[in-house]
Length: 300
Image 1 (cartoon, one colour):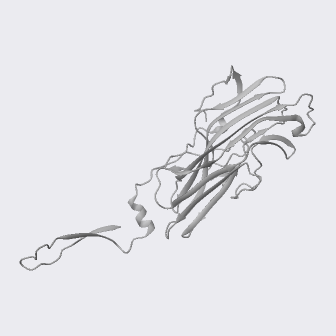
Image 2: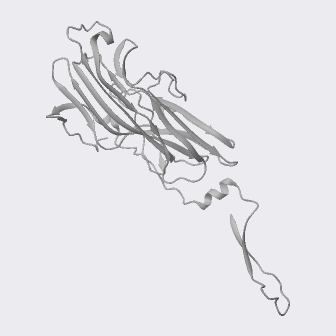
């Protein structure tokens, strides 16, 4: 609580020349980080319901249910950095399946961290003062996706989204960091989007753009609030080799025609991620001309 105290200097009957009436602002010694947070606007919480994980076939590293979100952010904690750093997509044999994807995420769900094999690595960092406690987590939106497949029988299939969709979290992949003391705190995770090629398609092209949010839930609060966000993306295309057999290895069956990725450096932001619609609810369908058949983006 900040209190204003008027300090009045007592003067003789005739004040000396230049004497003035002074006011000063003083902080009550009982202040704490928790009390100071009361000076910020009250967050408005709303329940966005339980949101399911992504389709493992289309967005293989989708995440757990989203918890409720609240608007606004305070200076507890203080944002330091948020980065997304990755690699180009590749053909990978994993668990008996041929896949075209961005790396390989081996960190178990419910565990924070990443590895040298991760397709896109995320690192968020904050500092906290004494009395600032809570939980750090991540939440991701798909900003846009354009996935086109020429199936084994020659028919074409498309999956597109041009508006933000919920992709996972918070917490993303079940990863969260408890903040119980003053200091610097770091959260790390990863993402490895891609597609299995078990259906032996003739050709596949994919372009995905994402936004990862650094989220905070203060001790005793029910809602998550955004601290910062970072955008990133990847793209690639493959084509089946002439004369290739379904029993051939992944690299013997397919040729990579193009591959790229975009890293990102995040900024502090109060921008709210969307919790619906869900990307898992956008289903592939027949392509129309050079584009995909339009999908309803309000379906749950």
